[in-house]
Length: 158
Image (cartoon, rainbow, N blue to C red; front, top):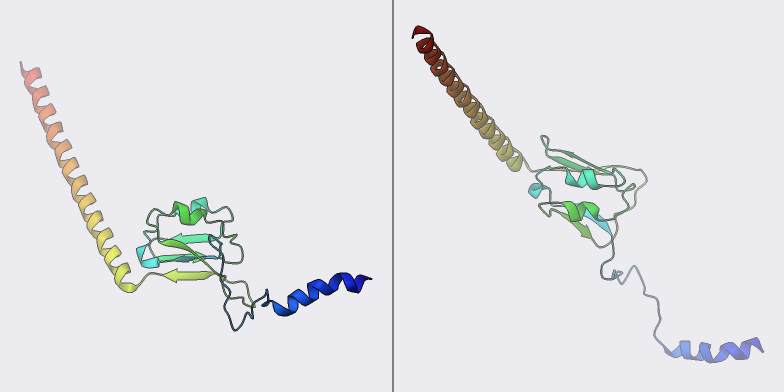
């Protein structure tokens, strides 16, 4: 009796195309809005650390001076908070998953030497401007102090 109940479904399935795909030959198409893994356009990153502060799993590290950004992909839950919080929008959620490996490793991205050199020049220029502004403020303070001292001498002389 049980075979007769399955016979109509078996006959229908004989003439339909397969529901499954032949995966290695045909790549899997991920559905819309699926979460995969995080990628970065490292040369656009300003190293602000917003992604590090909002990561619930503490999988990200940023070194602004060295120009590196690293992620521990095995601890990342792909929530996408870092992508939302990035002010420069250099983080992206890519469909698909990272390649599996035998060891748990951190993936580190480093900025190109040209970008690192330009950022170092910019830091030096800003430091020089800050030093000049500080010297100008000290000079202004000294002249104001001299003016106060001379006015105080004039008051005591009178």
